[in-house]
Length: 209
Image (cartoon, rainbow, N blue to C red; front, side, top):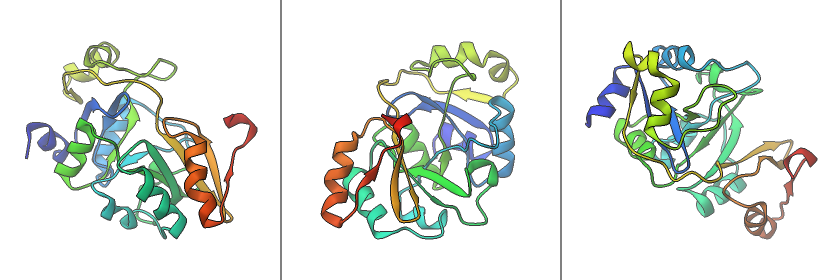
């Protein structure tokens, strides 16, 4: 177990690079770790927190069901920057959910993914920035934004720089429809290439275009 994995095991929060920007990582199964996370970056009830899986086989432990079409999307794009929201199991902390759904991904190659695999539990992946501020690409940006939390030991920042770019694409399932919630690194055309042979299409609300 690495030093950063031990920090996560203790219930503290780590800022580390994902496949796009720095994220605030906390053990999503530990209420004390989530308390620590939300003391750093409060979230409104209408906004959940996406998770990085500790391996794809941990997915069913978080959601009530994984439809075949969701598995097909995961087969095509995981590990990678596609987040899939499905109804959450009752034991999932409601602070992580939106309208009863939990959004997860098997992240692309990154330190955040390595830490989730090392811990063996899903990690939060909210961006490591203050509300209204741009996402952080460098550890230095995180240190400036959360200086007080670092000083009092509530946050440990892993050094380095993330690649930047688009965030993960987010899709959800509503009454048998696959809905694009956020356009990101995986283009909608690529999603359709997987969905249409299975008899499905992608709904794109006007606000997502």
